[in-house]
Image 1 (cartoon, rainbow, N blue to C red):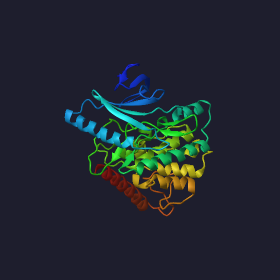
Image 2 (image 1 turned 135 degrees about the horizontal axis):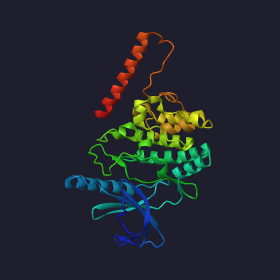
Image 3 (image 1 turned 30 degrees about the vertical axis):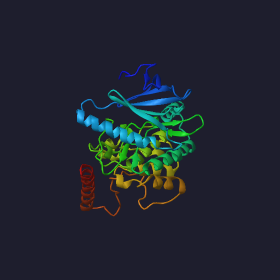
Image 4 (image 1 turned 180 degrees about the horizontal axis):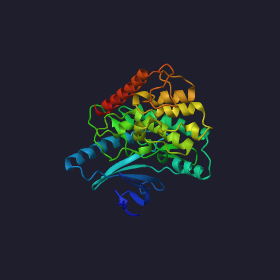
Amino acid sequence: MTPTLKNGEVLRGRYKVREQIGQGGAGSIYLADDLRLVGRVCALKEVEYDRSLSDEIREEARQQFLREATILARLDHPNLPKVSDFFSNDIRDYLVMDYVPGDDLRTMMLNARREKKFLSEHDVLNWTRQLADALAYLHNQQPSIVHRDIKPSNLKITPTGLLKLVDFGLVKILAPEEVTITVIQGQGTALYTPIEQYASDEAHTDARSDIYSFGATLYHLLTNEPPADARKRFLNPESLQPPRQINPSISPRTEKAILWAMALHPDERPNSIEAFSDYLFSGHEILTRPRPSQSAFDIPRLDIFGHQADTLLIWTSAGLLLLSLIATLTR
């Protein structure tokens, strides 16, 4: 996609574009100088709407963007870039955020992979604590905020070691009294996207969707291997290789936490980011134990089920469980 802004172009009489620094399905991200605050560098997140939308729906989407941008501008957390401004320019909208220097975790992981190394679990868990804190802050807002695009390339580490969760392109404000319109076209990156996020009405995404993406991100960072995506796992539950089979240095508890977070059915995941953190860091046990060697839909094969009739019962139960998920997602 060709950048819509030129280097040197000034928006709103204040933000002078230096260069394009990112590109996504929803538009570009630009590095810009704030001409009002000399020396301040910021990031301009461009929002471009689906051109196939009717004028009425596009206007509703723009109004939703303005409402959501107003909420994002109120956020104040050390692991989130500050949204300082938002405005419209012709047919596009823009979020103005702090520019975050440093490498993203995807770059750091790929560098480690090239050197035939793994990122340190100690470092990854340090970043995990920071990300969990940021997500708890977002999820506990009123109304709750779900990021919906947690992935290594959206996590940057500043020169001082501070993690920043960037790119609010797919953010969803969970206002139950409103119908959510898809402001940004897309469902996130497939490797990290839970199966419920593929539903067209988006009614089924909540904090547990971010938890799935969190777990998938940790899987990738600690193994250097992309996890099997949720759609593939739905058809073939054995396609997700346990992390310790790839990187045996991962601790058993970390592996269990990752696979718990990546359960296919939302009800099988931690019900909050706090529950996930408590299991991972505090040694707390949970009622629904993580099952690292199985998918959430895999019925355990126990010795007591040795006869043909019992085997048939197991497969029937598995089929009913799959139908239950489909019914849940299509309600």
